[in-house]
Length: 411
Image 1 (cartoon, rainbow, N blue to C red):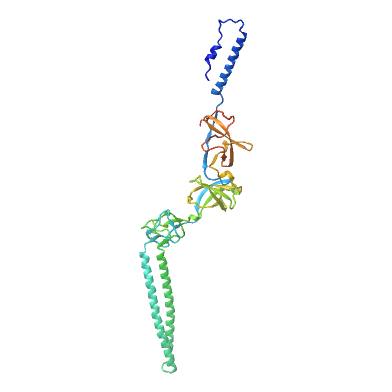
Image 2: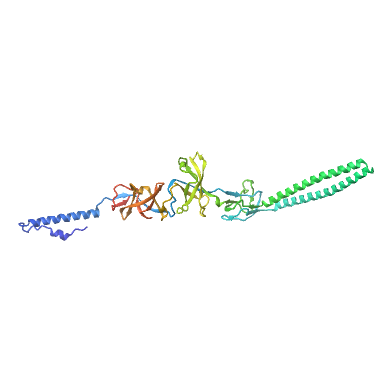
C-alpha cells in the first residue's frame, strides 16, 4: 500500500518557523504521524505478512456414479468365473473337415460345431450294413431248412408206426430238426450282434459331427480344418484334443479369496456390492452363495463364492472385480443422490459429530462443513459439501486458519 507523500510533506517541521505558542500544533503533528504509521504497518501486514503453511493436496473425484448399496464390513478382490465351461472334442479320432463356429458365437445345445472327414467310417458303416444283411439271409436259409426237417420228422413218425421205416431213420430226422433249431437260435443271436455292431458304427458316424454339450458362447476356437483331432493326446503333440471352448454365460459368478483372519465377517446370503475393474462407475448387487469349507494354508485365505443378483452383458469370465461385503443396515436415503465422492480419510477433520475439510483456492484455504458416509480402505465417502474437482488439504495440518495462506509442499 503506497504511503501518502503529500500528507507526510505536510508533517515536515519548519525549522525557520517560530516555536513560541505552537504547543497544540506540535501535538497534532505527532498524532497524525503516529496514525499514518499504524495504517502503514497494518497494510504491510496484509500485503506481505501472515505465515504461509506448506501443505499437500488431493483432488476430490467421483469414483462411482452409481449408488452406494450400504456400509462395508470387509473388502476383497477376485475374478469373474464361469461354473460351467467345457473344451469340446470329438469322441473319435479323425481329420477336421469343417468348423462351423467362431469366437463370440452363441450356440445352442446339440448344435453342430464341426464335422470330421467321414471317408473311413463310411466304409466301416457300409461293411457293418452288409454283415447284417448276410446274417439275416443266413437266418432265412436256416428257417427254411428247419421247416423242411420238421416236416420230414413228422412224416417219419407216421411211417415208423406203420413199420415202413426203421427207428434209426426217425432218430436221424429228429436230430437234424433239433440241430437246425439250435442253428436258428444261433443265427438269430448273430443277427442281433450285427444289428448292435451297425448301431455302434452309426453312432461313430454321427460322432463325426461334434455338437455343443450345452447352450453357451464360444470363447476360443482351438483347431482348424485339416488338423487331426482325438479325444486323447497322440501323435507326439501334433494331434488336437479340443475344437472349441464353450462357456455357459448363465453360470457366471465371483470367486474371491478372503483372509482367514476376517472370514468371520462373511456369512451365507450376505449382501455384496461388486464393481468390475473395467467399469468402476457401475457397482452391481450380489450376494454370497457359500463359503468353501477349507483354507489355503499357503495363502492363509478362504475361498468365497458370490452370485450376481442380475447378470449383465458387460460381465465377462476372468474379469477382475472388487467386492464390498455389506452389513445389514439399509443404504441411506441420500446414497443415491449424485456421484459418489470418496476422499482420503486424512483430508477430513472431525469435531465431535461434525466433519470438515479444508479447500484450497488461489493459495488460500477455506474450512467447509461436509456430510460423510462409510469409510473403508483409508477413504471416506463425502455425500455433501464438496464437488468433484475441489482441491483439499490432505492430510490436515496444524495451524490452518480460514482464509490463511498455503502453498504446495515440495515433493
